Length: 295
Image (cartoon, rainbow, N blue to C red; front, side, top):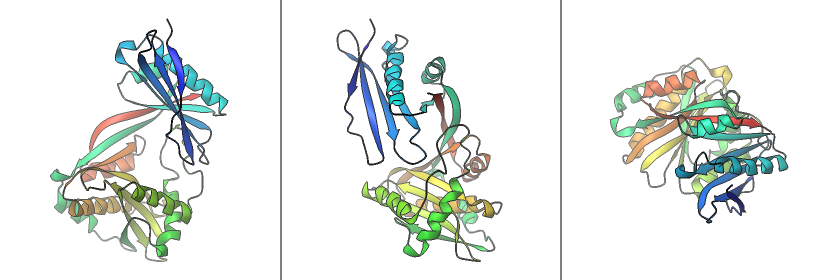
């Protein structure tokens, strides 16, 4: 007997996105799976929908996942979305499921962790202290200072050409202005986390050549998350990415003695950033694969 698929009301919404949900149950009304569909209204991402399906191990290969996918796919088309994307852990049952239903792999991400108690602080400090003629490091906590806000917003285009393969993320679409960078920082602070940014200043004109952001849990414990490290194309080739990230790591170790580690994720095609992570001692933990279905 096919599973019963029931649409649910999901309160997980924001001004820029909302989420649809479905519950799958068997003939006795016992829940056996669920599906969530994230719909973003952000410029550059309003053409795609993000899918998450979970099926109880005992009910896999019985049509539950396919029924949930059918409901989500129909809803995505009804919302005018052109692609459906899903992220799964490499080697998990999600891979063959998505492939069997017409999805294709479009992006591979390697997740890595730097265990801070094992950090060679002396080596990282040496990297952070290396001179880079024509450049200087600056840093701030929380919202960017007013005097750097405009150039910080301009520097966000450093992420525009980040290798994202065929993921259809809409990277680089939309305007990073002062209002947006301030709003992102305030959102991090409002949820109780700390935001630390290290940036490089071009001494010739005072503009920012790149930045590296780190979000730390409010209690200073557990693992912190790198939000992004980027260098503007015209300033690449000078080792600025390694310089900034080393300073970010050094600062985290000194300021948060109870912090366990730093987390980062990098597209497999981004060999340069993977090299930076390796140089600083990050260890791969797992890989996530993004799959895409064109509707």
